[in-house]
Length: 111
Length: 84
Length: 90
Image (cartoon, rainbow over all chains, first blue to last red):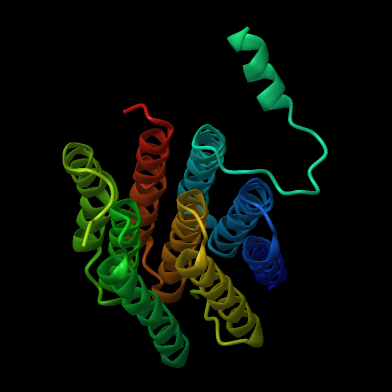
């Protein structure tokens, strides 16, 4: 019974994080801000949800941990590829951005 | 529980229809390829709801990886924008 | 005794996930440039993996977790391939 309650708490935490990630995807002004908020928060929410399912059914826990590990390994790779591709295709930064380290680094490479 | 799965089915079928409209109406063929990826993603969930996990695994593997690669290769040969 | 879920928690959880899918869909339709749509597809991919795991919980069958495992391994290749294409590589 206590195990069921702990699993439901993990499920609700994961659902709230995934909802907030989608809200950030909808509300942020820029491609980079959207990528930053949504990818990190949705990784945390997905891992919390799958851990909740694994706590509710303890026999499923190894396979759930394997799915969590694959999400943890593959999600930052795709986020990094999206951010790099967006910068290379010339998407402008938001007008309130204060720092552009990648652009100055690329200028140093060109010289 | 059946009400819950029916509610998920309504929401996901909305995603399916809207993604199909994006594939149909978009002039940028890269966006059309992304829309077809979303359609195969939701179709995998529907195969799982209809109690066919083997078809869902095949749809996930082929629809996510192979179809996108082949369509990207064809789009690289043919050009990105559809001209009227 | 297998675990039966009929409580309010699961209804709230599925409502939150469906709101997330709806917001991602709005960004997918209305995104001004192509990388916005790629980000929306990435989020929809991860939420789809979670939905497959939760459906395995609803139907109470362990074999459905294999679909989520295959999806978690393979689904990011589409996003990475499209991002590499945008970058000019591939």
